[in-house]
Length: 170
Image (cartoon, rainbow, N blue to C red; front, side, top):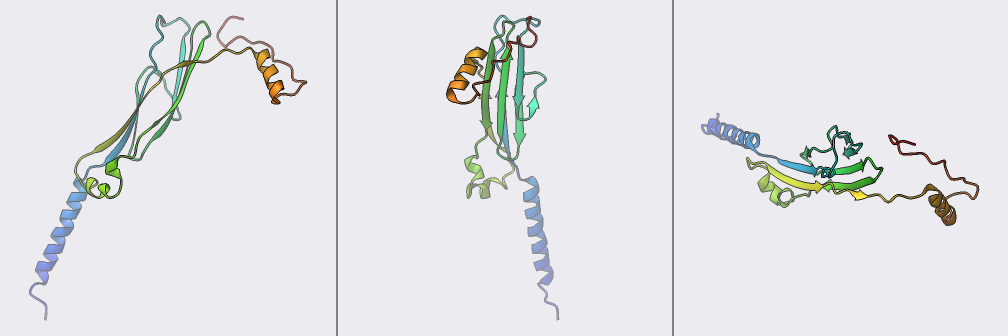
């Protein structure tokens, strides 16, 4: 003979399952943002003065290297950054670095058991400013002499012919 309380138990189970499904549907998420601030514009540079800037962020070459770049992911990010600038007079500047988003306290056990079901989005952020450093100019012949002295070049190696930088007059 069926129990009279059985329909009530099914109703409670359905209600509990519905409440859990609603809680999971309304829960927030964790995001990671890496913001890369562009290099400052070269003082006194015009549009056609021969200054060239190249920015590589992650695996992407930026079309506009003077614009801020934002990378987002639900997982922690490590974004490699390289920026090069060559001015009209041939001076070269470079910046290398990594924008690394931290694993925040709300993503670590046991805090994640409480923060994950909450209906808010928590964001871990990392900022990196591109600061260009001048690259020292080295004479190729002097570099070959140092390489021979340190054992990186054969004694028979000849210095390469001097070639001007691409885009400059010979």
